[in-house]
Length: 453
Image (cartoon, rainbow, N blue to C red; front, top):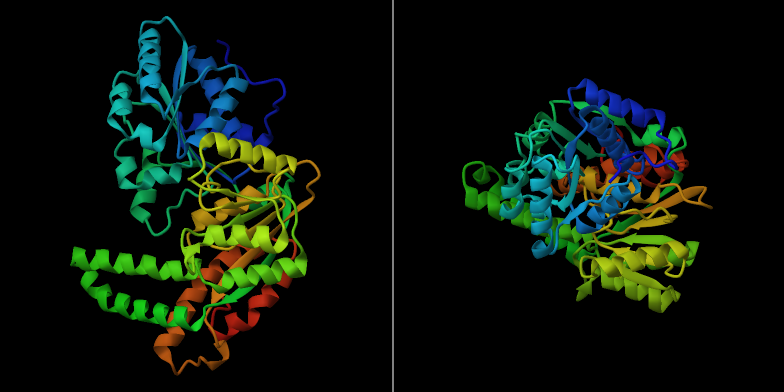
């Protein structure tokens, strides 16, 4: 088995800088690189350089999902490697990994590469095999922000000397402790940052247009939103000392968030938008996991596309097998499938560079989610000069009737809009038509004293 940089790959300057910074930090560190800027290639090139310096190397690569692990397997093969697929069928991979570890420890082989998923990595069969691995192991964690969570962080092996984290969003939303633990494990340092702005300005990602679409909650949704907010407020102070109250508050907060994700008028607004702008090939529709009336939002969008607009659209969710997803991605790239309607499985690292239009029908206030989704759309592709993002921003009805005199309702609306507008700011700042997008929400920002966003 050979391990070398493929002849068709030429590292960019920023990738070489990232690799050098990691070595300068004694073989540990986190690379904060925008989605679509070549994190996988950078990591494998780094591993190749470490292998040259050490003459032998054990590599463990961990990703959140099997689909993403499959992409890593493919890239490893491009580098001449024969990775062990250590996920899904444990009866197959456990004896393969056992044999590879024994061969490596006896000096019969100089390179072992194992690709796994977060779930498999954290389970006993894999953790037991880590104890048999050499300390001179390179651990590569893709989409590393997940490992700030306690249940995953506790499984990170401290015996491994070489550690590389990859993510576009190292800061965990509302989890300072998790962020600190993550960075501490990976050498106490973000050793290199390459932002989305850098990538767009230097021509490595596609420029994009951004169009916010305002969606009103209906009366029933507004009433439920207010009722849930009042219940959450009552539990807030108790939750600091009462775990049951905290659990109840979090459950109510999730229920309230789903009102925003699943607002019924989103489907109506989507129909208006498609009537106005037309339906385009290579379109990606992001939905929430909530319901529209009595059916899942993803199914409601799919039905709208097929029946009202005669679009060859397909669902892309966790219900589809890996094989089905691979076929869908291939058909989408070729144009045979015009649109994909997804929930969350396209959020993390799955390559869909052909995407030209994205419809964010459900977006949370979590920067990790909406930054990843934008990144899916901005990858370079033949015949793609720019991308277009439509963002469905939820606002309450009858904005004009709300005054600062109605303090509770006013503040409730303001807090909700602030979450939506933070996403708007992130998207509009780098958009080709940023000032034009700003005009759509200017009056709302002024009305609710949010001009600083």
